[in-house]
Length: 132
Image (tube, rainbow, N blue to C red; front, side):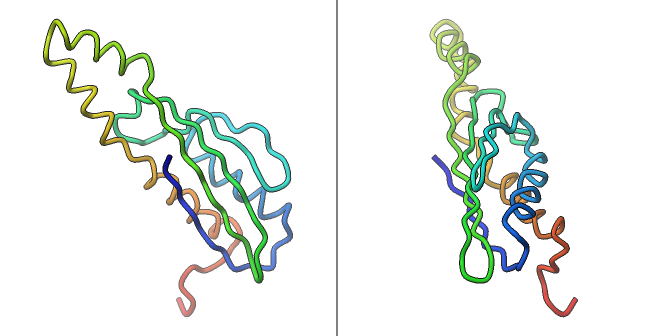
């Protein structure tokens, strides 16, 4: 499991913050479901993630109120999918498919999820660098 966290200082109401977070997370693709106060789930949110064709991805996103703002935490779960296992079995007969199994361990969706969380500030109209 990989975790991405972002703290945002704003006086926006919780429903506005939740809508902005859902809108920003659409960048990672997949299906957003189970939107309830403070949490939602993303299934197969792997847009622009290298070698993502080898993994099933699911992310749970929580939006928690803190003093002066919010903390958004994304828990990303990955598991091997069918292509991973096809490469594993085919690798016993032809060595080359095992490259797919090695590539699985280089999948890192945190960059795309971090970009999506940074986009929440843009949606809310918050300048991330005061003075600019």
